[in-house]
Length: 172
Image (tube, rainbow, N blue to C red):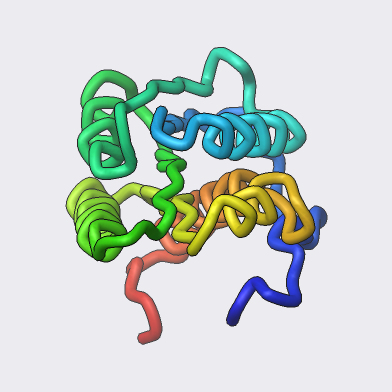
């Protein structure tokens, strides 16, 4: 579904359980810092709203979005985390660089999640221009940082539910 007509920051607050024991890593790209700083603040505010303690939020910056998967892996290596949120912004330019970067980042994040068996969340904006980025970083379409934090909370809840159901099989 396109975000064209949706505010990404709206969610059912009652569907999220308290996350007071959750340990979260956040990796944020320095590239397009005016956008990524807003995404980061949205993610942190949302985690705290759901009782994640300051001491359980570990944040690092990386030069660009391409480095997000490695930053996430380094956080997982250093801390005992339940989930990692990756935040970045790749704005389309005159060349196809955005396609290569976005494909590599998405693949890296997905592979790291599957290999670590932990939710690694893709919170990377892929807009066509600066205005579209602003619209999705606290603008008229909400804040993708909020959405990424909610996704992290929901996926860690799902992991706990599946883990505690017995055989752990999904769909059988």
